[in-house]
Image (cartoon, rainbow, N blue to C red; front, side, top):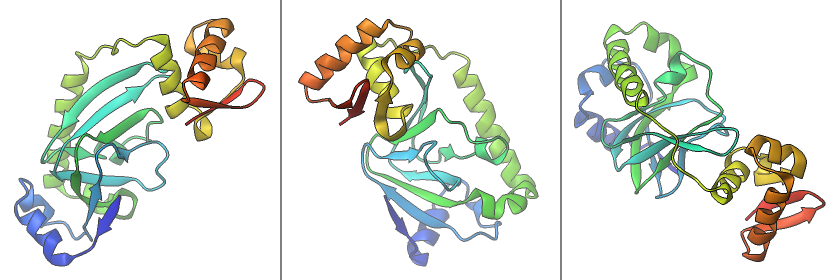
Length: 206
């Protein structure tokens, strides 16, 4: 991730944005963020709540359940909003956005400018349109089929602190499988170099 504060570049991106009229009416310090392919654009681990508008590139947004099942929520390209839900609701611990190619976003802090955003009717109209479209898309969502091996890897990556699984019995309960099944998968993954055993019942995803 790279943050850019070049005022000319920022102004050029805003000028060609579909939302120029609204963005130019906001008294906000914008900046640009560039992401590499595969980099997380949004995750529960981020400290700062950001509102981001895709200026170039594309993203995939997905939801990870506690059992490691992955739901594809949507994908976005130029002019797609990230952070619209965060203006009104507490940050979800299960929603992720990932750059599917090199990505550039127009960005600003939600917490710093929340009052100004909520008092701007034009901005709120954009948010309502965005959220309505997302709710409509989510109505047709179903879980992406995944093997137990895939769910274990997702569980370790997204649900375990520092990507470290601790406790076979408890983890098996969350994954809806038996402890024997989970241990077998962890042994196979260790042999394949995907995880490292740190101690009894403790494995780290590599």
